[in-house]
Length: 107
Image (cartoon, rainbow, N blue to C red; front, side, top):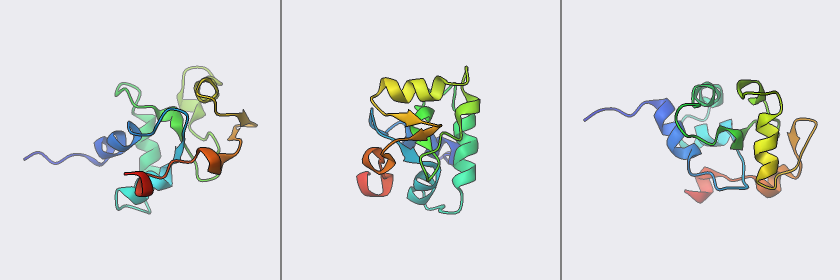
């Protein structure tokens, strides 16, 4: 049986983030039992563009759009979030806790 890579596990979690919600790199890492691997989750998101993964819904633990430079166009990540009804100001999700989706609780 083929082992599923860490990146593929990250993508499976990210694909379950509901429309209009966000989560953090650390929350995904914690859900996968690798709590200290938030940076690895970030690397997975950087490589997710061909995987049909809603990477724009993954932000840092303070709700900051740290992955925005990996999207086409400097405001694309913000535009995608705003299209889902999530307000962003100064590269940070407004009311982050209101929109936060925790895979440890939800899955």
